[in-house]
Length: 195
Image 1 (cartoon, one colour):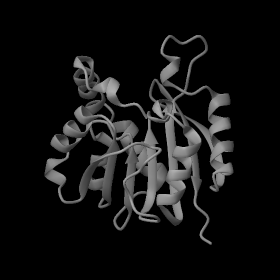
Image 2: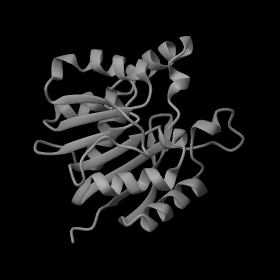
Image 3: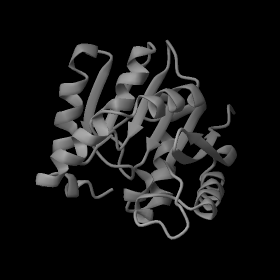
């Protein structure tokens, strides 16, 4: 996950844009992952922290991981009132700074398209999830001939991502389509087998 593209001047604008107006998406992701008290959530590519706040407000302990220093600083600022339930760390999907089996939920929202190595990222998610842990990968669903499709997944890409999750050892990996108002999401859900 490169991440350094957000450290320049446009990163501030992007971060502020991501920090507001995503309440519906954050609620959907937390609901879909079944987040609640007792969960330990890792948000891969946490950006400015909107999804961290949602999980913490539901009683979960949350770790946000992002390679961008600007995004980490924004996440720390926007989640300050939720300390110590929220921690923000430097890292990437391919190198998560977490112990084995330390999370019950892992999600990546609008960040998989930034990963340098999707298979390595999926292997890391599998490593940090406890048996029975849930994973949710959400990206904007690409529109035919859309101008911003490099920051999205096609439906076929979502199905391939589910197949790759299965190959990484996740169970019941499936691609889904969801509409949140005018926004459409491609979501891959799976879990680490309990045994």
